[in-house]
Image 1 (cartoon, rainbow, N blue to C red):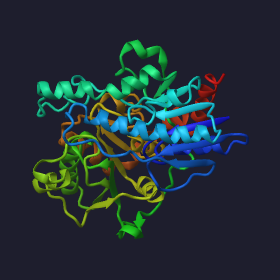
Image 2 (cartoon, rainbow, N blue to C red):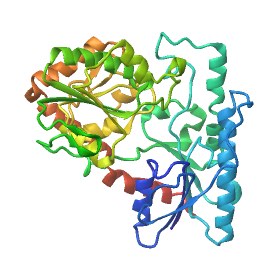
Image 3 (cartoon, one colour):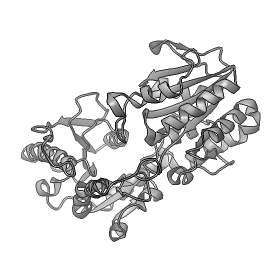
Image 4 (tube, rainbow, N blue to C red):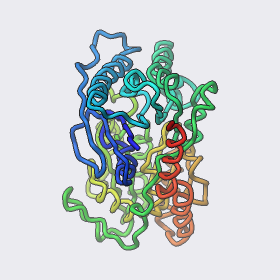
Length: 403
């Protein structure tokens, strides 16, 4: 079979699955993307480039839509060239809402367009109004509603779609319910597995915690309020004060990946650390890590902290569970779909740093008491989200639409 994948970033979360398909004899996989980095076995990467960026003069409600249209236009042109070369896909699979999938039905009429639908935006009831300190204006409400336009076009034109979690599916309009199936991308549980006694030594970033007895870990794409960074820092400061031998490792970039930028031209890391300083000798910011370095952090973790607003659940949360981490996580709907309190993790109030610190300290003080919880953490991912089970299911789902 011939598979066409589309995502502006490469390899994205879909790259490993695309490579899995490409390694099956008889399959051909093409990946259209704007990202000129890396290669994957069994995947032919083809680059496209939008003609320009969205203009600053564009109404701020639809600046994102203009970006999507420019992405779609460039992907359309690359797909036309692919068609002219005689390569016609049996299945098209793309990440909805980014724009690259918008016009695929015009290039390849009659071919199934399948999409990954990750998030449908609401002004109220999920991420946008979660923090009572952040009041939404009427302008915010209109802007958030309009953010769904590109996604709605994909919902209308696609033949079917997958959503990673039931929580995320519930955010989409009920009219599309029959078109969407819940099927997670899958976690590589063979790679992200426990390894007792792994020393936390990362020579590339100059970090050696091989002598540390207690290591708290926190991972986020960006240090920002969406992933509870302010509350995490507050809780971490309390842990460092109460546990003199503890070290904390914070993995991620100093940027806002999802929410608003920090005020006054600063980053959220700068703003929060000015308010709540952390001892640099015991709080270690690593920056972005390689996959192997990141796995070492999880395997060496004494207690892992994950916080999120009611939004898309991070893969890092599930990978931490797969690695057998003692997870302390926010009691928010996406987490609650995967984590059961006192079974495979500890759930805490997102807005209560004291409660978060208490949970972390409890794990650090008596690690043996949470040994069974660590085992259940891994078991919960292996039994429900392992790629060895979900990738064949995803291939079977795709194959249903091939005529």
